[in-house]
Image (cartoon, rainbow, N blue to C red; front, side):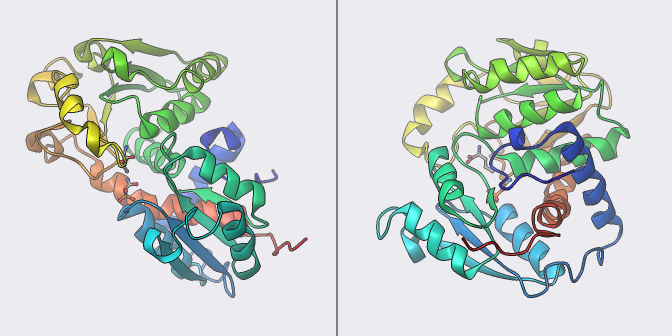
Length: 313
Ligand code: CP
Ligand code: NVA
């Protein structure tokens, strides 16, 4: 099973890849020392245009636990696209390091990195997708339910990057998903129909509904994310108005299955997309999700870098 060269979206992985990654992640979680010298002598660069806690720390700790070293480059350090073009940064960094994790605004920036880099590029979030998060989400569901195929997930909120990767992963793994968003915030017009087709091929359904109560009814797990993503701060007031009625709170959970789990990629805005009561409630698995970022990032690095040697053209 050859790994893809880069990991920019969940679409870069086959079902076989995804299942293997989740198995390795579970092994990493059970045994912290698993793969401890796998990245000895290797360096991973993190090039982030946006702030981060989980993604940055999970990758930094993952690389260190695998015996490698990390260079973090924030927006002020290299001023990506301003001080020099993305294609130059990608080629220069490829001469120094063995993999590059990028967090970008435009998804095309991550794609340009991958086009010019001579080492694997991992997408640590773009405006379009957040594939590393979806890996942790799948590991969390697998732990909670002991299976993935046939589960039902209800997503309530913004049709954003986190949702896009979530529906792509669920489609490949046979998880049914009902999505409730305001009409103007439906998921991407290319990702959605492709995920619907994939879901169908894997025996699952993917539906959009306007009513949040309909999305959570019968769901094994409920997922939400912020209404204002990084880069959308100027739309904040308008968004807060448009998302009224889409909060995951005690009232909405009355329509859900007893014992359903609640997921959120974090950071959460308590009192907006989710209440404090639900986030801190018995069904919440958000801190397992956050922890699982570390284990899936280790599995991903082992998968992409484990057996490769540096390729310089
Ligand atoms: N969930 C997530 O990606 O968190 P950070 O933005 O803190 O990395
Ligand atoms: N949708 C959020 C996710 C943060 C992890 C954002 O892009 O800001």
